[in-house]
Figure: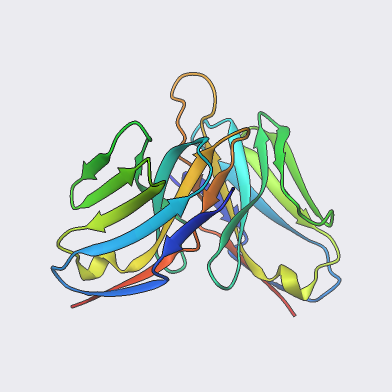
Length: 112
Length: 116
């Protein structure tokens, strides 16, 4: 129940294309769903986050779509750029404690 | 200017040794975390401290002992290092109570530990 399942494991997209990463969760007590971006040799950094009472959140080229009934959420990167090449983690927080549970990550590569 | 800093950035040591990793945050946060990222990039929480009090202690060998001398510091001491301890260790922090509370965690740059 504490898992967050993320797919795909890796993704290659042409410059200008749309990158889509999907996540699914089990625990209905989760109340915060962030996406973190990690560049090689750096720590993860918050990219965008959503609460379960909202179905979509957009910040610039990044959009989270959230489907509470299906217990799924996804990250869409519009007009993908080579500088977006990084590892992306979906995550979920909630329940009894303060833990954030991370998905296993998606390595995104944008072709120039 | 660095929000969450860790030292050292790289640590190479032999099996059986004892080592420490230090973490400091200057964000005024009250909660700090240690995460382990393995070779497959999987991020897993190890510990969390709120105002110097341990609030999360995952299933981590007791060779790992966190210490929080104050709200701005959370150090990780590892005894009798094993090959399987090789990983990148990240410190993170957030504001859990009071004004400016947020779920957002700010991560440090990581410490790459290699045990030979």
